[in-house]
Length: 262
Image (cartoon, rainbow, N blue to C red; front, side, top):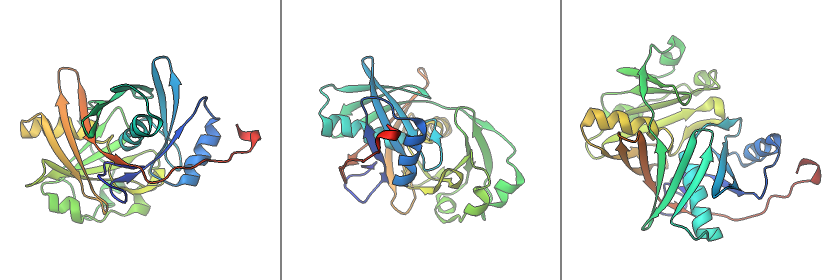
């Protein structure tokens, strides 16, 4: 699947594996490494909904937006689940995705950024210094804030240096004249040098830019090579974020596993 995309070859690729029962963790990790995509999502029916898990090529992720969007598209449009809203249980709590015309609207938690003093090695990995550095408690990401979108678009991080922080991701963002905010995301320690479009970081970016800009609806853009738009809304009373996007089916297939690993 290509998530946060109007057509294939845009947005962020994700693999989706619908299962009847869970595979061993080592097998799911091996499949994700074999796929070599930012995330592979595995989903199993549970109660009145589903349980979803996400794996990067190197480890299990606590939250993933684009692979959740891709999973919802598969359940709605490929498998043909007859409901307007899908409910998922995950490591990050309950999530939901509803059909909204041609769009899919994800209901995600809202995360608060905490100001921190970033380690010197991390700051040295970015050739343009940020104006502020934050960290989210709920997921392992540093958020580097810049004054101008052009800085975000042109910064060249030292990925080999950032890879020394295997449990951390690095989101950079700034305000923009056309979009409300522009971002990029790097997680080389997880096997993701630069992620094309990262839905999960907007659990923190949307509340931050919503407060700073004084508006609840945030039109965001991730300025990777493939790029992607996210139409978001912050709901402070519920401490939730709505993230809207589209997806496109690229390929369907079957994974052949030996009986010894199933």
